Length: 272
Ligand code: NAP
Image 1 (cartoon, protein in one colour):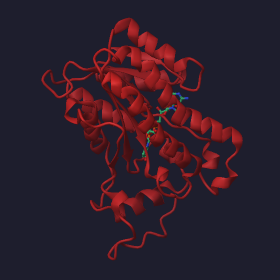
Image 2 (cartoon, rainbow, N blue to C red):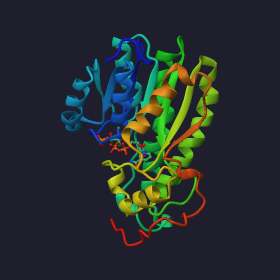
Image 3 (cartoon, rainbow, N blue to C red):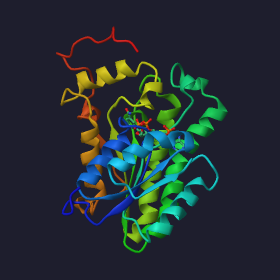
Image 4 (cartoon, helix red, strand yellow):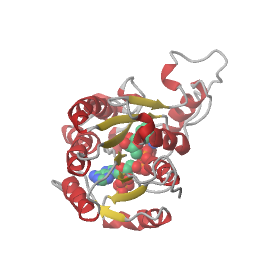
């Protein structure tokens, strides 16, 4: 870990590491390489086993339970952080959930219960995270990021209610940036290209979506954890001191493309 890196002297909370394929893990490693001190949250006791060795690998000082769907779960987690650290400089929110039986087929089949749960866990939790982090950030300022996806902007097969939740999340980023600006706290989102993780495995035909994206992206490759990690360091460090309210695409350029390229191979037979 670097003592002279871009994040040296900065400490913060990372929410959403499930395993070493998680996007939050990619961001964690990049931050630690730049000297950041990290506190991790995990959803519940059963998942602690997976997160603990990863936290140890980065010399994390704190490992705190936080189920964002529980009343006061987020507020209590940040109060616990405050017992060890009197201030923090950054937060990474990389949490989303929807019933996977509704991440396939038609959007209009979404049930009221799943709609509420998906919006609660994937969008409201970010708003509450910003509120909970404020007492620890208001004196020195800081930077907060969340993770979103292009399915917020355009229709992606099977993304359904998660696309609607991500659209609400992206709108929240703008409102939160306005609310938090007076404390010199910046709020941004990274819109990552498809990455194979536990969460994305629940999306119907994810392999097809991922291969289509790769084939049609200007950089013609998959988005990596390192790609997202580097952008995370940029947004959370002083390099992005004038950037807030932004949805920053880290998707090998896919979002600028309007139609299938002429020489792009036919991948219509890819399944799963
Ligand atoms: P992941 O490794 O499965 O991470 C998702 C995280 O959300 C897990 O750590 C999961 O915890 C956590 N979570 C779900 N419900 C929770 C709850 N009630 N309380 C606390 N934590 C909860 O998948 P990922 O792909 O890296 O996802 C991270 C973020 O990136 C998500 O917002 C996702 O939408 C976004 N994103 C992903 C992609 C992609 O292609 N993978 C692309 C763009 C954006 P447990 O595993 O412990 O339940």
